[in-house]
Image (cartoon, rainbow, N blue to C red):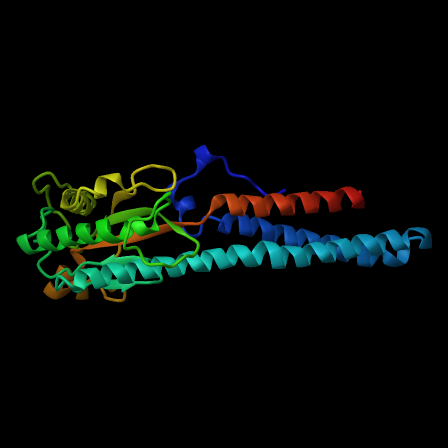
Length: 294
């Protein structure tokens, strides 16, 4: 029936805001199977003896009732929880942006991808992982903003005082500090960096270290599984700020500086127990229908 992935096999990508999507896709497959079964019953109707026609009609009605239940009680609530979590992520991004603006730090947020981009001007020098003096101050303020705002959106028995009085589905599952580089290629190793992958990862790590030291509350931030909330990732030059530019256009100084940057990505999760309870209910209903049809 509906698949249940083992906890040990889950990856971080399966824990984000779209975690239930795989289960929803399984549900769509079952809808297809159900429709085929219903169609088969319709095709068989003329060949069914009158004595069993009423039973066939009753089975078809049960299938129709299940499809309606799946739509109204299965799919709709799941999609609603996903949309709610997405809205909550946008709320967090905007609060972080507002907090940084109080320190005269202008950042860009991407609601669709759940990211916040630090100003790249003078953030890193070419082929350097250590941020500039101004860059370090910006990253430190980001850490303070995270420490102040993020605890309000974690799974916890107690919300910190001063949190917004808003509810909603969705909790933070992870925060990734992402390092990026321009498209200048390494002709030879520079310091400890062999290529842009090394450099982007190092930039993310250096930013993480600064954030970790910016506020003592950072070290205690945990995800719903009780593990560290903040991690790092590096993307080299594979995710430029403007992916419509040609390689030649990316050679321009201002573009290179924009691509040497740090972004922060928020990953959300929904209440897995509610999702699993919905899937269990659908399982039981479908199994009951299958038993009757057999």
